[in-house]
Length: 290
Image 1 (cartoon, helix red, strand yellow):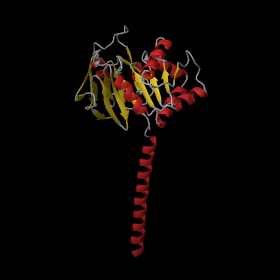
Image 2: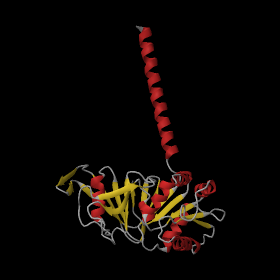
Image 3: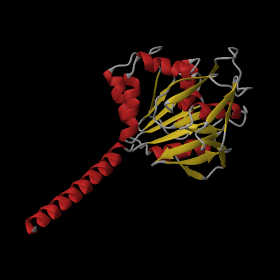
Image 4: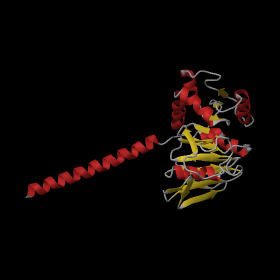
């Protein structure tokens, strides 16, 4: 009996030690996989000087470092590069290089190293689908961006450059209404067209120009089609700074955050419905947990 009790206590202590070791490994893994960098996701429109200054400060860029502008979203790469670079040059950052992979440059190992070692990477506006087409052709671009983010770089993007941040990307197109409109005029099932984005931010769907273009229907559709995702609508001249699992609103306007807390979607013919949908509206300077 005594031997049995000793064996039982030994087995119990071993199990506790194994459990503690397992939890410690999981904690270490979580810390290891947490990005060292940050995201600045801009809702389009003009960018206040204070936003650019904050972007530079948060990126930690020094005189010996450099910034990269990616123009694959842009309708005119040269124009996108000019204005993309100028905002940083005017703020005192002189070491900047622009890339338009597939249209202007091929993606080489040297280009990959340039992305991975950049302190600040800025994705211009234009068409998010065009940007992701270049990624589809050259998946190593996405890998280099992910590596840069994990290693401590700031990845920033405006308008289309904001939309590509999430894994599920709103394209702006609709299944039921082929003529493009800047917002949705209906809440309908199987109408939203999405594509795969960069996935730098997970379980989130980003929409931009949000208040100015009245895109409530679009993001409501998104959280009903993808009920386990949070929808974040960012207005023009406004951004969220994402780091360490939190988002801070910076700029001039609001950020609207939609959650489908009921996790239930219903339909009537084409119409889509949901219960216990939650909306929070955040102002500049306020923060929320992602």
